[in-house]
Length: 161
Ligand SMILES: NC(=O)c1ccc[n+]([C@@H]2O[C@H](COP(=O)([O-])OP(=O)(O)OC[C@H]3O[C@@H](n4cnc5c(N)ncnc54)[C@H](OP(=O)(O)O)[C@@H]3O)[C@@H](O)[C@H]2O)c1
Image (cartoon, rainbow, N blue to C red; front, side):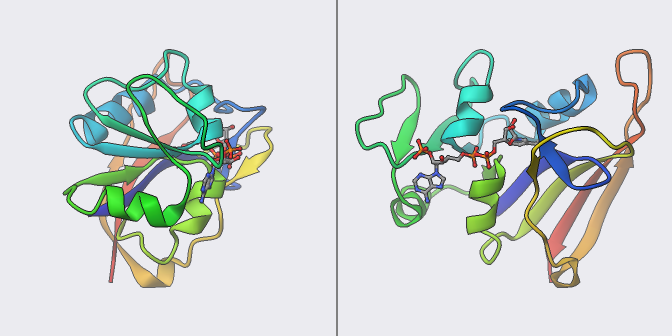
């Protein structure tokens, strides 16, 4: 099962200056729950945005063209083809961004786990356009808004038809 997992604002914005444009702890908890014990794939820029490096209890795979790059507790791959071979036996694989990586797997992705945040933020990286005609909504859950989670948000899961 190959899935995308991301959060976006009302304009499909996902990043700002190498980081997330928002602080939404509910979404970080959801991310952890969904990816726990599974494989996560990310671009080098997204990896650099992780404050504590590789995420524990998950198989971390990072895409980079730099064949000399070595990162502890991370598998580094330098092409999509090698990546697909590497994950062939994995049952649950989540591509966690960023935009450059999502764009390369639009034809293969089977599930979309998207957190939609009902706000407009400032930023510089957007989700590539997804043709939702090829997907059906299978789950939708409202997030709880409180003093730590200021914006209305919903967790949606789409499955390819
Ligand atoms: N809102 C969300 O859910 C979310 C999720 C993830 C990321 N983000 C945000 O998105 C931004 C980063 O996204 P981005 O699109 O700029 O970068 P990215 O996709 O995270 O990383 C791009 C880098 O990945 C490597 N790469 C990509 N495709 C490759 C391939 N086929 N083969 C080898 N290497 C490949 C290259 O690294 P090298 O330059 O090393 O070759 C490339 O420069 C950040 O602001 C981050 O916080 C947001």
